[in-house]
Amino acid sequence: MRKRAEITIKGRVQGVGYRFFAVNKAKELNLTGYAQNKDDGDVFVVAEGEEEDIRTFLDWLKTGPQLSMVNKIITNWFDVSNCFTNFTVKY
Image (cartoon, rainbow, N blue to C red; front, side):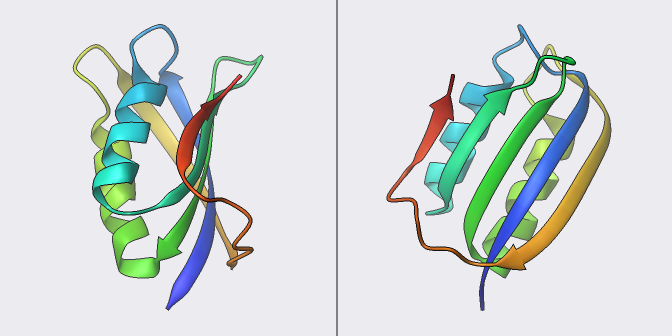
């Protein structure tokens, strides 16, 4: 079943390549959406695709790239919107 996940990643996740890590993993899993830095130091991700693929993606996000340190992930699930054609970094 296709779903949408809105994900907030907390920890040392800015300045360590986290958004680009997320983009690469999302593309491997055929997910669409975006990754964006927030003013408070968090990274916000919107991912749409098969629920199983999003759950795999969440496992990757918990680890992050080598220099990151993920303290907490908050995930909210929604119906898919189908408004994305790819997965990008949003500035």
